[in-house]
Image 1 (cartoon, rainbow, N blue to C red):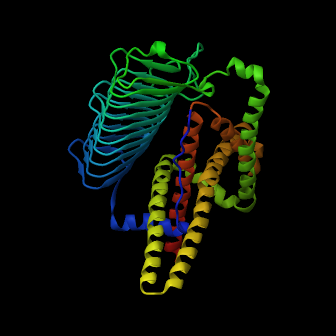
Image 2 (image 1 turned 60 degrees about the vertical axis):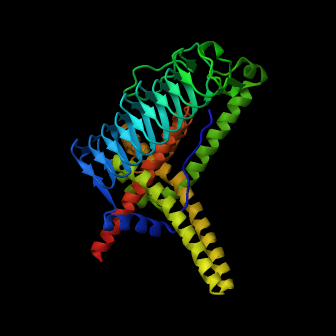
Image 3 (image 1 turned 90 degrees about the vertical axis):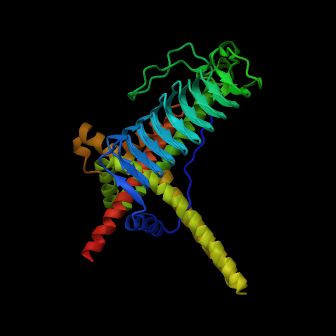
Length: 442
C-alpha cells in the first residue's frame, strides 16, 4: 500500500514564525479557543475555532474552520468551513461545507453527514453509512473502508479491505491487499468504536453503483467478489507486494533477503534516532526533561498544537517566500538590480537552511521527545534504580518506537504522525510558556 506522507516544511527563523503566527493570532483574536469541548445547539461562532477536550461535541454552528482534538470528536451541527480532526474516534453526522482532514483510529459518517468538498482520512477504519454524502473526492489510507453512502466524484484508496455498497459518481482507484484465509489483523491496541474487523480484499455489492471505472491493484484478481459491471469497466493490475502474506514465490527466491532488507531499514531508523537522541541526552538533558513533561501533562493540547504548528509553518514559509520575491521585484524596479539578486540569494538560502532545520525537528526531534518520556515511564515502573540515567529511557523509548513504526497496513504510519504532532506541539507549548516567564521576569 502506497503511503503518501503529507508532513512538509517551510519556515522562517523558528522564533519569527512562532511569534508572528501564534503571537499575532492571540493578540488580534483571529480565532476562537474552546476548552470545555462542547458547542451547544443554539451556539453560533463567527470565526475559526480551536477546540480540545476528552470529548468534543459541535452541535451548533461554526462559521469558519474547525481544528478539533480529543479522545472522541462528534460533529452534529454545521461547520461553514473545513474540519481538521485528530482523535481516537470521530463521528460526523452534520454538515461540513469545506473539506475534512481526519486522523483517527476510526471515523464514521452518519446518515445525515454532508461533506461539501473533499474528504481525507488516515487511520484504521472508515465507515460511511447509507445517506452520507461526499460532494467531491475521497482520499483514504486505512486498513478497512466500508462505503455505503454516496461519493459524487472519485475514490482514491490504499487499503487492506474495501467494501462498496453505496454510490460512487466517477472512478475508483485503489491499492488493495489480497484476500487472506487467516483471521483479520488484531493489533496490540484497543480498537474503539469498531464493531467488526473484516478480512482483507475487495468486495463490491450488487447494490453498489460506480459511474466510471473500477481500477484496482492487488496481489490477486478479485473479480469473484465484484458483483456489478461499472460503465467504465474494470482494470486490474497484478502487484505481488500487496499480498498480506509472504507469497510462496518469495519463499523460493529467498526469504532471507526480504527479512534482511526489513531489518536493515529498521536498524537504520534506530541508529539515526539513537545518534540524535544521544546528542540530546548529552547536550540538552534539562530541555529534554522540560519538553517531555509537557507531553506527559498536556498530551491532547500538544497534539492539537502540533497540527496548528505545521499549518502556521506552511503559511509562514509561503508568506516569507512571497515577501522575498516582492522585495527583489521592488528593488529591481527602482534599478537596484544587484541588491535584488542579493535579497533573492540570501533570502532563499536562509529559508532553505531553516527549512532543513525544521525538517530535522519534525522528523527526529518530535519523536525523540515522546520516545524519551515513554522510556522514562517504563523504566520507573520496571526498573526504578535506573531512573537517574537519561540514556536508558532514550534507548528503551527509541526501541519501542522503532517496533511500533514497523506495524503494517499503514498503522505504523498513523503512530508516526501522532507521535510527531504530540512532540512538535509540546515543543511549542514549552517555548510559549518559557517566553511568557522571561517576559514576566523582565
